[in-house]
Image (cartoon, rainbow over all chains, first blue to last red; front, side, top):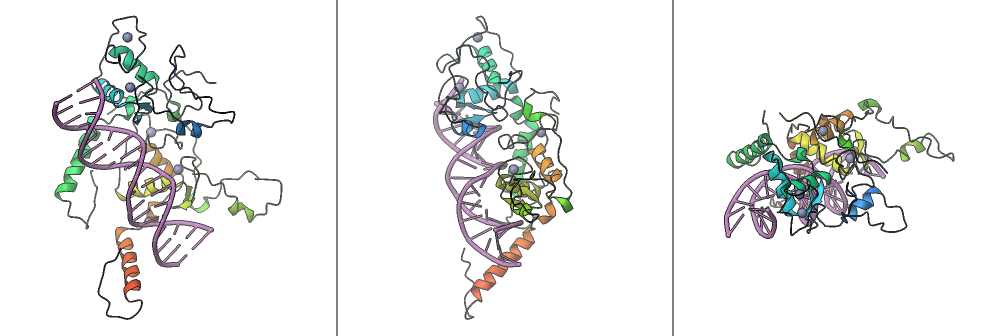
Length: 152
Length: 152
DNA sequence: ACATGTTCAGAATGTTCA
DNA sequence: TGAACATTCTGAACATGT
Ligand SMILES: [Zn+2]
Ligand SMILES: [Zn+2]
Ligand SMILES: [Zn+2]
Ligand SMILES: [Zn+2]
């Protein structure tokens, strides 16, 4: 067992990804599935479609964690504007589908703890560049010829 | 520019590569697979079917390196559109089957380091020429007079 | 059998708007 | 805020010539 000294990527975490805070986050236990040794791959495959942050129904991996659409959007918005929240309570709110909107501070912390990484959010530059490419492709999109994706 | 620092996810830790010259890409020793009858010829057959880029199951040599289908496609697509990626971390992500989609920059770098060569990718012209040949072979195969029907 | 290319459903970004 | 949507990227499966 390793000591999670950092936010674990779902990919790097072998057996972990169990919530960093084993307190009472009954989230996604590796499910001690069977007696057979379950490799990291098996783990992914068996990843329950449950948001690791709030417990809502997850729609897939978002920024490296299995989350719902709500937490996905919340994480992107918060990180992009470098939001800094303060917990109105004692900083240890347990996040659920119903109360997730009540404490942004703990929700965001939970996002990070579950392994969501802000580095996977496209920067404004990257987004802009993509839009430019789309535009260029639509304008000069003369089909065959020179599919030059040159953006230099 | 992004912030150079990042959450120390171990995906991003430095890792020594195993540079491979295009001429001697078969250096990956299968480590004396078994003590049984393993002749020098058996070497090829027992070539570890492991992607040199991400460690996934390899399907053979692709553009000069033993890789998986994923890295094969990734390399072709990236090179064909002359993609230019930027690592959101420090540029030394270690690529694995599970995290390979997370950093295109380091994945592509690794492809090149492992010896994949863009020169082996057929150009659009070459591909077109091949298709033409196939067509011609189909059309002119039997009796002439067949209309240029583009069946696909 | 091997290594090219092609296909296309699904994954994972961002965006919209009630 | 988040469900629905638009777009690109990914890779397993497949087709083809050598
Ligand atoms: Zn959630
Ligand atoms: Zn709180
Ligand atoms: Zn690979
Ligand atoms: Zn990287």
